[in-house]
Length: 367
Ligand SMILES: Nc1ncnc2c1ncn2[C@@H]1O[C@H](COP(=O)(O)OP(=O)(O)O)[C@@H](O)[C@H]1O
Ligand SMILES: [Mg+2]
Image 1 (cartoon, rainbow, N blue to C red):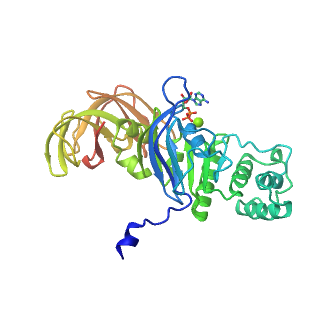
Image 2: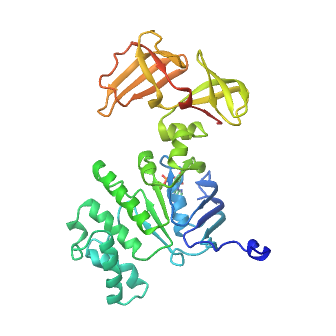
Image 3: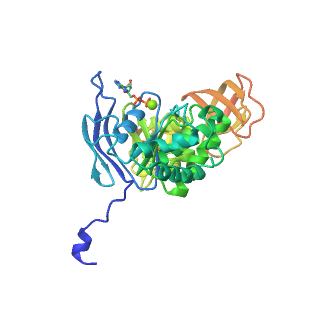
């Protein structure tokens, strides 16, 4: 390769989306979001995950051009679109409440955006028919939204956004109007469609399981800032912050001490237990350790049956929730939340228990 071609970077693909130092201040006190930096690659589904009010919708609306950033830059397909209007950007939004036109048929709803753009009706209908087929809605073209189920209405909303062939498709809590069982089904449909068509999507939810099920990457939002960004398994198994550990897996974050380090390994002391774990970059001194609820083996009484680290405590409350047993344990490290996926009977309050865990399941976290 010549020096010339090496210095010419590859063309940026149309769905690549980048935020550079973006701030949105509505002028009502603290900015709604700040220091937002991320890059989403073409063909990826990236989810903004976080509690209500953390700024997810604000970021989505800035991508769509429905809000302008107070500072910073937004690049779409490598082009600066920061000050472009919504109509100038090649981006479509699927709303929380589907916002279908109630008096229009499925076909008319899906065609609407195309005819507004000036496409002739027969051409618009031909294109819409393809999208309708893609979403499994063939045969429903003449129905009104009120004659469809919630899941079908959601698919019409997606068809209406998708027919415009956007570079980026945005979803703001698209499943919030559906019941639990349908939610799982529709989220899988969205993920399948996204993978099949290699769509670039930004998806917003406050539900961690939904986020993990649909995403290539998750951006966890914490009070208007990005907490962490990573794949679902990275964030679930190796969170770097207490906030993400708690938000993604309800991990127990307990005080610990790093007593020695050796290359990428650290000796950690927690409660009375001492053990070695993989912890690159750890420093000797006080630290925090994340222990997910599902990493524990519980044994009643004081009998020491395991050789690994363990924490002693007594049961505060316990309940059977069908897919397992939850146990809240009072320990010298504070209250610990334990989940036993194969548990069949809850523990009686007051039972003394030993909570054993494998060192490999413990995570040192930075903050
Ligand atoms: N149009 C607006 N004017 C003033 N404040 C707003 C506006 N929209 C959102 N906010 C505020 O910005 C913050 C983030 O809101 P939002 O982006 O809707 O969060 P989320 O979607 O994560 O629930 C909240 O504190 C909210 O009250
Ligand atoms: Mg919102």
